Image (cartoon, rainbow, N blue to C red; front, side, top):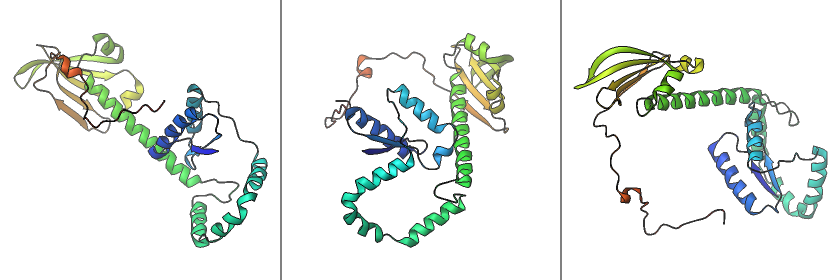
Length: 251
């Protein structure tokens, strides 16, 4: 039997989970035990999302038998090595175990059979929400700064209310100053408006100003922009060092 985390939150858990799935495809004859990562399994939706992804990848998760059946099975399996294992476990520091239990109690886990972990869950839920908000903000910013480079007018009209503020110059180049207001209410809450100065010579962005709801803004100014530069065949060739080893994980 191989135990494998669902990989719900931390990157190292996710990496271990993905590596284990590769091995599971290679050795399906083994028994693979998937467990929901402690604390993080209490964040709403994470376990369900991971199980749905497993099903989409062709795996069929099956719930474990009741706890009493697992306990009896564990006792039976443990019996043959009990004389070797017990001396090792008896040498474990009881003080360290007590401190661990005390910390769990402080997190509202009052009994091993009813692990509440209320304070830890509240903290992790808040951290997870903040992480998602930060990722959304990063994605919003990347999308906003891509608007002036090849985005179609149809896309802009569908997603933004567009206002022409006039003709100006960015450096020595003439430009049209546009103001874009998101039509999506969620995006509008985070990013009330975007300003773009579009070159009248090649119709690409010369400058972009993305406003945040806090009053802060990000300003990008572009120079020496090359559109559709010529490429040689050698530019598309993958050049690797001589000592590179090619590995095929699925074989």
